[in-house]
Amino acid sequence: QVQLVESGGGSVQAGGSLRLSCVASGYIYSNNCMGWFRQAPGKEREGVAGIYTGSGSTYVADSVKGRFTISKVNAKNTVYLQMKSLKFEDTAMYYCAAAASYDGTCPHVEGGEAAFGYWGQGTQVTVSS
Image 1 (tube, helix red, strand yellow):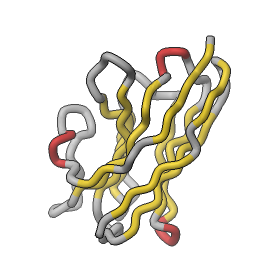
Image 2 (cartoon, rainbow, N blue to C red; image 1 turned 90 degrees about the vertical axis):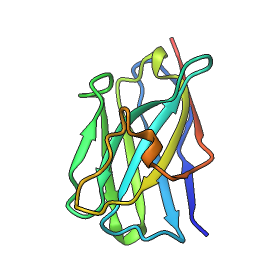
Image 3 (cartoon, rainbow, N blue to C red; image 1 turned 90 degrees about the horizontal axis):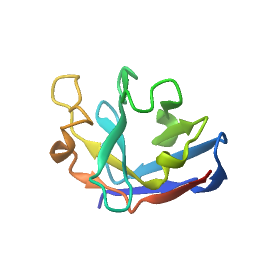
């Protein structure tokens, strides 16, 4: 049974930092794709960042580029989302998701959400202005 468990969310003031973690179990973590998504109240879910666990190739959405970094520790089956200079508009439920890679590439987190077949329960990030 595949499980993705997120942690690290919380409340922080604008300008602060948080690091989210996602631990994968029951899933062939190696050489596959992991992504972070977020959904704010009343808004559609949006892709934030993705990583290929093989090469470590990453993608970060323009909306958070320069502030968010995605990384991995394969030995721990864990993917991280480091968030800095947080803004009020970053407030959302953040989800970790996993997708298979068949050719060493990953589905785009922006627009490719349907390809991510496994999802965690989410961790809430609240940024106060």
